[in-house]
Amino acid sequence: MPLVPPPFDPELAACLESLGDAAAPGFTLADLDTLRRGAGAGAMLTDLTLGGAFEVTECAAPGPPGAPGITLAVCRPVSATGPLPVLYHVHGGGMVAGTGRAGVDVPLDWARELGAVVVSVEYRLAPEHPHPAPVEDVYAGLRWTAGHAREIGGDPERIVVAGASAGGGLAAAVTLLARDRRGPRPMGQLLMSPMLDDRNDTVSSHQMTGVGLWDRTANETAWTALLGARRGGPGVSPYAAPARATDLSGLPPAYLDAGSAETFRDETADYASRLWRAGGEAELHVWPGGFHGFDTLAPQAALSRAARAARLGWLRRLLGG
Image 1 (tube, rainbow, N blue to C red):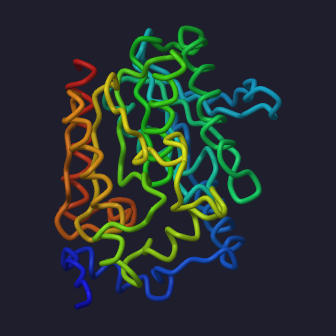
Image 2 (spheres, rainbow, N blue to C red; image 1 turned 120 degrees about the vertical axis):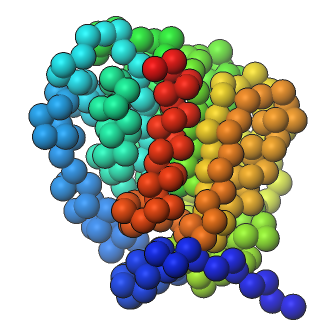
C-alpha cells in the first residue's frame, strides 16, 4: 500500500500552488547549473547590513590543511558593544549550491533582536568537492571564528552554530567534529530541517516522493553528489551524515525543527530522540503541514511566524537574553 503524505497547511499549500513549476520537487544533476544560478542570484539580493544595522566585513581565513582558504562574512551590530554572542551560520543548498550570503537574513534577524555577531561561512560544494571538503571548510571557519571572536566583537564562549537544510546537517556534523577533535565547543546548535541521513529511507522520505520542494529523488541526488557510490552503504562517516553517529553524548544543547510534510521530518525527530537518550538537551518542533523551507517561501504565514518565534525564543533562553 503506497504511503500517503501528510496534508500541507492551507496557507502553505496556496503558496506552493502559486509557485507553479518553480515548486517542482524533483532535482537531478542535470538541473545543477539552474539551481546554482537561482541560489546565487537570490543571495546577491540580501542586504547584509539590514539597512545599516550591521557593519559587514569579508574575512579570509586558512582552509583545511592542504586546501584553499575560505571566506567568511562577518556582520557586527553597529550600535552594540562586545563581547557579543556569535551566530555561526552555515548556508543550505543540498551540499551542491548556495553561497555564504544565502539565508543570512535569518540569523541577521536573530542578531538584531539579541545583539549578536553573525559569521557566515563559504564552503566548497559537491560534486566537484565531495566529502569531506564541505565539513572541513565549515570546521576551519569555526576554528577561525573562535580564535578571532574578540577581534570581531564576539565572545568565544558563546558561539551558536546554526543552519537550515544542508546547512543544518553541516552544523550538526561540525559540532560532532569539534567534540571529537577537542576543538572549539559551540554553546548550542540550531538545526532547521537538517539534512542528516544519506540512507534516504525513512517513512517521511518515501511519503514525500514527488511531493513538496525537496523530495526523495532530490535528496538522493544531493547525497550521491557528496558521497558518490558510498551513499547509503556501510561505513559512511558521521561527519558527512550525522544520523550515522553512534555516540551523541557530550554535545551542546540543540534546537531542531522540521515540517510534518517534508522529507527530513523523521530523521530530524530521530536525531532529537537520540540526543535525549544520550543524556543531551534538545528542543524539537514538528510544524504541522510544513513543507521544506516553508518559513522562507511563505514568511507571513501563521505557521512561519510561529516557527521563527520558537527559534528566537530558544536562542534567547540559551543566551540568557
